[in-house]
Image (cartoon, rainbow, N blue to C red):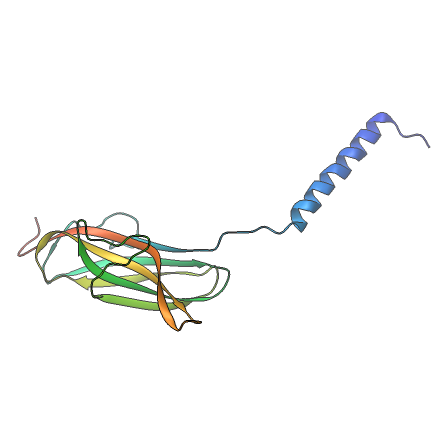
Length: 162
């Protein structure tokens, strides 16, 4: 049986496509493990963040946490108060006492949105509400700062908000 040139071309294309698809499925994909931390407004969405708050009045926010480390992890979000120019870096957490903490174990691919209610009592301009993400290192038996953080600047006033 003699194979026509067109039939040979179609068979070659099928074999080539099948080979490429097989290789793509066999070769393992390496994904970079990561954690995510997000700050959401009072309605649980990006935006609608308070800019001015009354001292002693609760502020409602939400924190979004996601785990894509490839394994279950024990995480903690810590809220602290900083100021303009006094916020964390990617290597150093803010040197301030926590005003709110939340701990959770998340499996790989899991996420959670957590309501946060904070009450600021100290009046001042450009106060930074800082949220830091920490991970528990089971080998060392201690918490390690992940270098991930978010912050929101607010003006804390006495009396009624404008």
